[in-house]
Image (cartoon, one colour):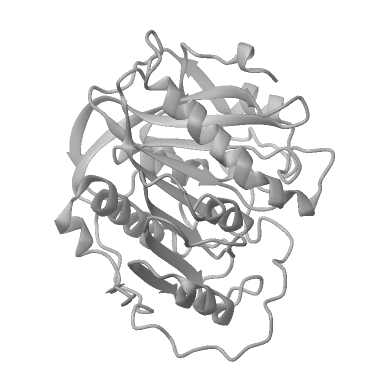
Length: 343
């Protein structure tokens, strides 16, 4: 899967039905024994609020990237298309295209070719006019961008370019699963981020002058939190202004260098990443940060439409991205309490 095979002129009208529920991968490494600190003042669940903002239809394309012959990184890229409209409520895959016909389903462990042929409809819609902040999403163990596609499309519909790579040895598509390979994924993510940024500078690419690379964010779920925080180490790109960690853990050396505002999402009933572990991680962050404790939610019960916590997750993440990446102060009012640690 080389870059020469990238479908650079095409867009996809998203029509993906997600098939996985619950945990997307094996348990995280056990946290070292230590007393859990008192709950941070941000650990308060706000009521879901409707997102009434300009929203877009969503296009997508597949980038055939690779960081060396043994590290293919096919990347789903979601972006706004058409003219924005004022709308409230959930935004997601349904806004971008028709659902597959009833009865068309795939087994939980699917081959990528089935996903491409059976779940995505090719179109040629150009991106919307404007420059849109860039968001990089990192999936968890035994996950894939397709599993999170409704959420990714929802963020793109809110006015962001969203890139989601499939990691070579920890995704649901690999025949060579290697859990320890997560230590190599921050470098993969950094490579993908650079390649997507380059599209905005490439004359003739549909995203030429459409990506705001001065305002970027990272989002990671579960082991994807490790991958995302691996880009927030000493000397990291100061244009990485925000990060969202969903039931994840951190890479060695994370939370160093230029400050990036952080949002943590944690389910109270998560058996894989416990609340005490996420609170310890939250306490480590020296930057502005917010903590959303999602009551009655498990490890992945807020990632698909219809899940118990999906609406709250969607509205909170979109508000966070709009505040941190576009300076939307009213969006800040939808967020849990923001903590500003004293250095």
